[in-house]
Image 1 (cartoon, rainbow, N blue to C red):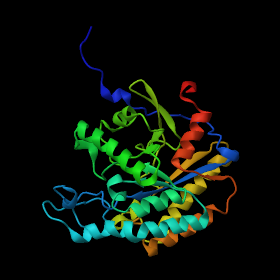
Image 2: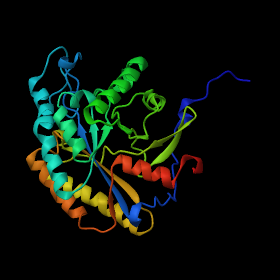
Image 3: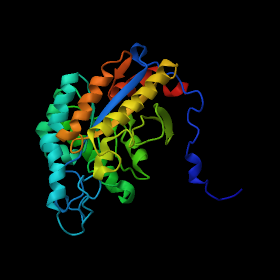
Image 4: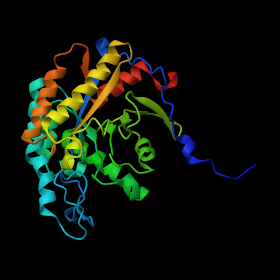
Length: 309
């Protein structure tokens, strides 16, 4: 018998649902599920203020690269804008259209703006744990990441009165999903870009639900004009994604459209116009289920319990 360890890459699934994905039976016979996710990260990003060695170089919106050993005031002010102003603008827009979001809240960010955390919960939005910090966990030691997961849960529960049901690291490491499952209190995680329907995994002998997210149907493409230069760019792309998935739903194969937003990006006035136009457009269709991640997780567990998959 060989002592060679199995190739870890065999754990990948490149097949998924194949040619015939299941009909998700969305509530009310909806032809499409639309899930909006607002990332609140300001205060949790990489900065010397948080004890990091470098400043944040990802999605800082102004093209300033990471700097080692110094604080970068302009970059910090971009993240402050999202927390101070952008998030409130987006909350007001979604209140106008009576649509609930998943708030992907970094715990370190929201604990510095507790009124924002309380307002998100009071308005009926789902609070998803976006980790304790908004950093790349690929190089974070396992014991520190485990501690961060516990701290994130405690902080968000204290701020909002309810522990988060969903998890989304954003930049997960090789241990992230296992640690999230071992924590034991999450219904699902969002750390996947692999599909347009939820799916079950076996993680350490436990069934675990994954609800895919999107870095493509996402306002992150406003960053340094890396795809979206104007509000019309965002609206056109999201409208086209919606139209294709709505068409597939009419043809008997409904899907999930997950849209990622950031308070410091879409919250700018010249960009927020596109969000208003998009919500107005989607509200013009019948058969659209606007759902939070928790709504989708609960529905999937009822319709497709893990033992049936």
